[in-house]
Every structure is written in C-alpha cells, then in structure tokens.
Image 1 (cartoon, one colour):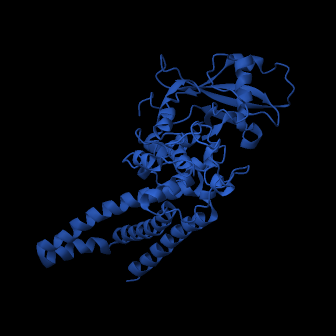
Image 2 (spheres, rainbow over the protein chains, first blue to last red):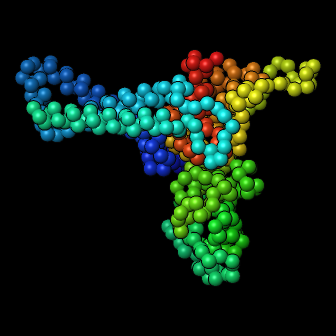
Length: 143
Length: 255
C-alpha cells in the first residue's frame, strides 16, 4: 500500500483484535465466505469426477474418508453454519432489525447498534458452528 | 525503527509536578524525505488527568518542537486531534493517559488518510465525500420567502436525526472502518451517517437525490456492518446504525 494513501490494507482489515466481537464476526464472515467459495469450486471439481465412471468416482470419494478429509469436511460444516447464522443476523441488521433507535446520546456513548441482541447473535453463530462441527466429526469418525 | 531521544532523556529531570512518568512513542514521518515512518520515544511526566494531547504538547514544549500535530479546541468539539492511540483511533484531547492503563503510549497518524507529517493527516477526501452527500437542507422554499420564520419540528422528529448531527468530522470512523482500509473509493461511514442525518430530517426534501448518490458500487453496499465506526466515535453518533437505517430506505423497509 503506498505510503501517501496510508491505508491499513488487508492486514488492517483482517485484524480482528481491536474492535470487539463485532469485528471478529466480520472477520469470520469474510473468512468463511471465502472458504465456502473455495469449497464450492472444489465440490464442482469433485462431482465432475462422475464423468470418469464408477471407479473414478469411488477413487475420488475415498479422499473424504481419510482423517484429513474428515477434518476438512468438519471445517466446512462449521463455516457453513457460522456463515448462515451470522448472515441472518447481518441481514436483519441491514434491514434495521435489532439495531436500536436514534436518540440523544449520553456519555460514555455506548453505540446502540452494537447491543446485546447482536452480541448474542454472534456468540450463537459461533456456538452453533462449533456444535455442528463436533457433531459432524463425531458422525464421520464414528463410522 | 525505534529511537530514544537523547534530548528527552536529558530533560526528564525538568522539575515538573508529577511523581509518575510514561513513555510516549510518537510516529515520525515526513513524506518529503522519509521512506518510512519511525518512532521517537520521550519520557513524559503525567498526572491522573493528563490527556494524550497534553503529553504531546509537553513533548513539543520541552523536548522536540518539530513534532507535527493538529489540534484546536482541546475539548472534543473541533475534531482536529484524531490519531491512533495504542492501536485504536481516538481523539488525543479526549483520551486520558490514566484510562489507557499502560506506561507506554504509542501515537500514530490515523489510518486511511494521507499523512501530511508525523501525526497530521489530510482531510480533503473526508470533506469531499461529506460535501458529496449534500450536507444541507434541500427544499424548494426557503426561510427567506416563507411566511413562517422557522421550519417547525416536533421533538419526535428531532430525535430521528439529532444524534447524527453531533458529528464533528474528526475522521475516526473512517480510520477504523475495515472497508476503508482496502477500498479507496468507498464513500465511508462519516458521509453515509451524514446522509442519514439529512434524509431523516423532516424539513429536508432531498432524500431521492441523496439516495441516488449513495446507491453506488462504492457506496452504501460496501458497508458490512462491522460496527468499528460506532465503537470509536467520540460523540456517540453511531454511524453503523445510521447506515443500516439508511439502507432501509433503499431496501424499501422505510419510506
């Protein structure tokens, strides 16, 4: 990034540590979105193996039956659940739901849009993603 | 490159009425001849009530007068002294050193603004985007030709926008915004919050023209509701709320 612009760049955008759980949710949302996009592309490639016939299909499917394959799918489940639940929260926020009402601010100026409803939404998304991932891993490794 | 100022070390024994001192790390950068920024460290005596701006002015007065910093009112009204203090955008005059709970205070110029020198940044882009959203009442009639001397509003109508009228154009929200960090064309939370301020004003008739300006690929749709802008606002403006409410007009939730 050129010094004359002095922009934080991707490093600053991706730094989730300074602005509370909302910025962490923003970071996880972007990360999971990119991860799911990568999975979508990989999934199209994977399913295209059916063109190689039954043997080719079975060969490729075996990749997901390994320990690494199970962990990979567990992460995909977590990304999918987090992105869905947090996405609903963000969409509701975009529609003006749960962000409070304009009012004269009083010191110390706690922003109404960063209220407990959205914090509960974020923590719920993280918790549900963790539970779904653990359940998925339990099912896959329990086979 | 951290550099201990020998002048500072020599003069810390200056008889100032304080038992405590902190290390103030100031980012130094002159775009005319520096390739990158560096830090200079000063030991500054502080009291419980000392603000970061006062500590910087102490450095200017006793140690190094060449430190460039913009300030004016010293009471969080003019919006001049925004800077990154210990990693977060804050007003230097509104931040007491005692509330930072650290013996080392690092001050840097605000992110996402071109640096003039040291801690002073250029505000041209901020003012341009602010002007772009037409920050004034738009109506066909005016007070000069109307029979009424004032455009009357109920207290409820005032409540709709008064919070957003507190903006002092300090730029902290733009500095904290993750979209501003990567998108140089993004209009920014400051301008978007001000667009809401006028759209929500019952006296204003320029809603459609403002919505047209912000309904752009680098406009309101680039906000992802990270909320960092609201967390750093020193006046309680809550730009994130204003932006989401503004988006409601474009999505048809509000009229």
